[in-house]
Length: 135
Image (cartoon, rainbow, N blue to C red; front, side, top):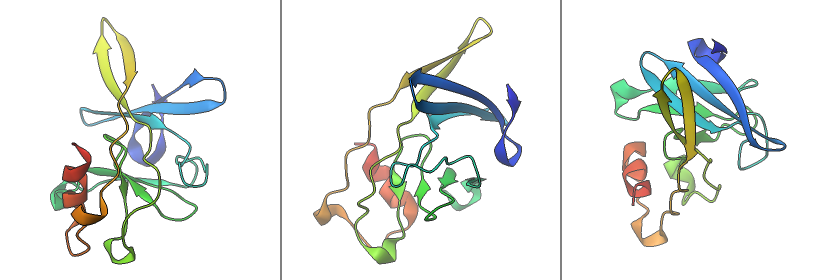
């Protein structure tokens, strides 16, 4: 692992040519996701932000430097500003991470299902959107 953004340690990897991804580690938490924002293709780790909002019951979020879209780096959901309506940005590809025998393994997670219009609650806090993304 090498020094990464916002105090995280990072291990870059590539599963497909031209598709950069990374594993991040901090305080016992493993995260892995594609570095390219699904909205505009901007590298999320160059000028972006990674914040742990656990004290707000929101977990870790990754912010895109181009348009300030926020993503859940565990399930990939775009955490949209609820005042702007249903999120139309595609989800971020994320990966399960495991450490075995001193090696780090990643496995692509299924992309979350889009939030249905009838399930979208603009007054709900961000964590309600995350719960919908799990199934």
